[in-house]
Image 1 (cartoon, helix red, strand yellow):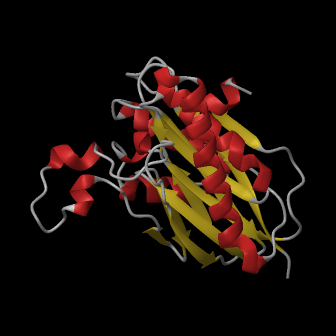
Image 2: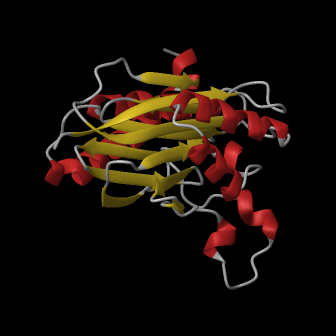
Length: 250
């Protein structure tokens, strides 16, 4: 049985921001969301640099090479950030989160660093498949104050080790995967996400609705979503979808 993904992506600046520091990519083998940070221009550069670097692995990879291939691609993206900072020292405080899936039939590799998130809708249940790399999560059980919820202890920044969580996963036909920046999850809860993902078969409509809910909740940050359905059939022959800063810089 051939297994493939149908995919889409969307991004919005939100209500409170003037520029979009998020970037995302959705292709037949690669899904990725990056949420940049670092002040004026830095966030856009960081997220778009990482997404642009990762694009080269949107290709068929043997299942037993998925984790290594994606991990090596993240290492190259991190090194590229280091090079950009060397060329433009004014960007030395930039960085980005990254949540990415690399596919081969029903098999995939997950790379995650920061507080963008991955969700899986399977069998009528919604699961968060990533763990936020925020200080409040690190201090969980030690009464870490809520003000630490936006403080990241692991990102891709060209300076620190920038080592992501890496794991192999196996998909099932009928699964729906959502990758998103925290501009969505900061204001839209799991129940609302579940209702949207189960409320329509149309991927584009689901992404539009998620972004709309985030903006209705105040839109305090950029909002970016990548959505994919696991389907039976051949690989979808269509152009990748690139959104956010990566699209603006393309």
